[in-house]
Image (cartoon, rainbow, N blue to C red; front, side):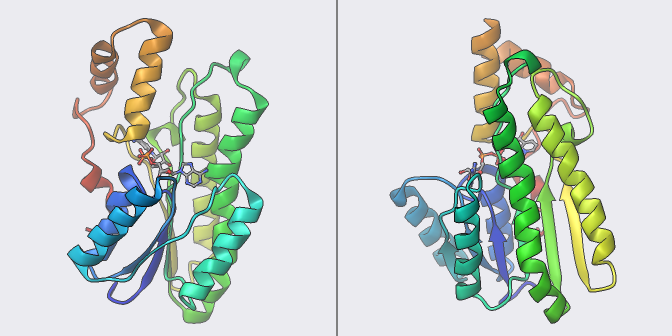
Length: 234
Ligand code: NAD
């Protein structure tokens, strides 16, 4: 049922978002990529997906922390496809700081990128989804969407928040053949997680390997979640 449909995946130049984009493309879904990266890197990603899966691949630049960029992204997406069938709110970052050191700028950026941007994108694309009587919205939270963690007050707050947003939207669209779901991954080996381990090591003076081992020990599988496992469409 994904053949010929259009999906926007935020933060799809790397990690989980890129894997999700590929898992959609393999089913014949056209993908609109977003996220940071050099022109070269992004062109390479586009070409690879296009040639591997024979779908249309677009890239839209948008810094989701910027309101004006989000408005432009919405316009650009509508110019690429009349209706967006699938919206994946995945983009994110993790900048740890204990509460006394958590700056208002860091806090605000967490809210802007991982809570306000998903809200704005849902609000922008939902009316056309209702008209088409089809829509799939997937938000990416985290295990920290239901747990607390030291140094993660901002991240935990937005990841809890996006679960609430998902539940509320899901109820509002329940009769319109639109679904709104959230996924809450554990530790997935992506640049985001590896940077987190590196920063933890630098600030604590504990070796990266030990931090990684302790982090893994908290998970029932004692291992990474493979990035492909987070791809709900596969
Ligand atoms: P990643 O660093 O590999 O990818 C993050 C993507 O988001 C990149 O494409 C990046 O360019 C983009 N991005 C960041 N800030 C942006 C902004 N302001 N505007 C537009 N794009 C922006 O990280 P990942 O691990 O793939 O993370 C993806 C999502 O999964 C995030 O929401 C993260 O919180 C969540 N998550 C990750 C893990 C994990 O262990 N890796 C666990 C749970 C949840």
